[in-house]
Length: 116
Image (cartoon, rainbow, N blue to C red; front, side):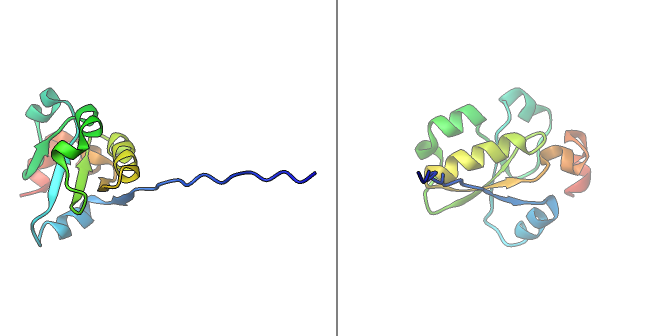
């Protein structure tokens, strides 16, 4: 007897590095969404980011996103933004995860030094 396994369609969101993001920022508009909690966002953030927490964004994407608009997601280490991008891609949005998040630029304390 032949057993056929159904293949699942996996959505792998696009991931970019901080260096690639810097290049993209030279040709605005680029929408960057920080998906951390508001208290974390207030402590330190990249310029030109807006804060929409992870849970809120995946629950109500139509309130914050347009289907034809690319958004770039950032979190502490990149894992949350990757998961969020994956969920949003499945729902039909164009979401890109920023690899390694704030850790990729030396932690949240390094944001202003690196991006000036």
